[in-house]
Amino acid sequence: MVQVCLNGPREAADGAAVPVSPEAMGEAAEAAVVVGATDVHVHPKTPCGGDSLSPKVLAPTLAAIRRRVSVPVGVTTGAWAEPDPAARLARVRSWAALPDLPDHASVNWHEEGAEEIAAALLGLGVGVEAGIWSGTDGAARFAASPLGPKVLRVLAEVTDTDASTARASARALLAALGPAHGRPVLLHGEDGGAWPVLRLAGRLGLATRIGLEDTLVLPDGQRARSNAELVAAGLVEYGAG
Image (tube, rainbow, N blue to C red; front, side, top):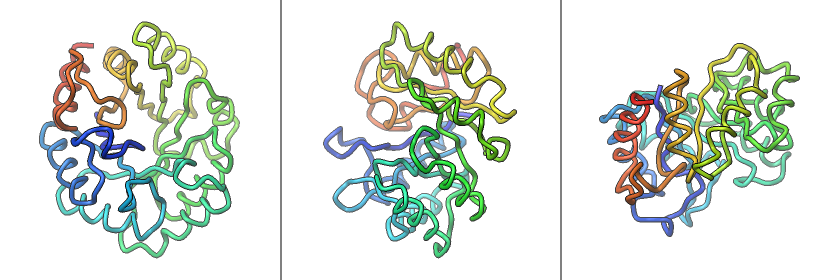
């Protein structure tokens, strides 16, 4: 599986290619799926460009993407979108009023309130991507979590952005995850580590992701013109391992 991560916390200032409006996200998702993406991860944005967990922001984003693609669509629940854990949980619970729920949502296991967020999502019938970041205690927390066997998959996120060390950091993270409750693992990196970690995922036969959330450049260092261009390049790099 190769997931496209359309935008992340990036904003329009990061480049014209970063989709921030619902329509732009829908167009970017469609183009990425056409070239081979099989899943979508997106950060719904307010009109000002900030990440939001509000159902009023999620609804038009999901609608715009689903009009164009039939693959699963997931969203973030990152603490930066709503720093207060109680408020973040209330936001997620309010998704019950949405006419259309996301297929899955990522939950960063090192963040305060992660277990409660994951439980709320599961109660809504939304799949949970357990985000386990290198450099955090996320792996240890996840190993002890009673919800571990219930998640859709594990997102093993390598936060080491040094291309020369990211692969070693990825292997260390996978070792820390151990059996990961038997759940599928999606391995990915970011910025300078994005391409080395993607190639490692291909070599290990793990799912991965690529898109403007994780990197703004192609394997040769040129600026990417779109998510679709990154996905097309990612499929080649993934296959080459």
